[in-house]
Amino acid sequence: MEIEMNKELNKIVPNKTRKRALTIMYVGLGMNLFGFAAFDPLGSFFENLGLLIMAVGVGFMAAGYFFLNSSEEITEAVEEFEKEKK
Image (tube, rainbow, N blue to C red):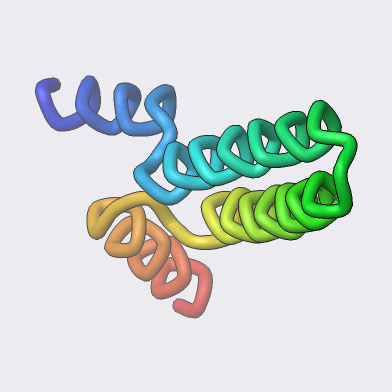
């Protein structure tokens, strides 16, 4: 019973990769807005750098959805594959 509850909690809570991705995306957004507010030539540099950092955050977000969350999920996926194979 306790293991089943923990599995349900793991599905609700995002893994560390997704949390890191959101942090990176918000940092990129902040740099982009800072560049937008600064009208000098350095402002356009910060705008573009912010967009680049946001793109890296989107990549991390995609990786967070493609990779499994924990070793329990990996074990479960292997067991399901072995059952289908038999």
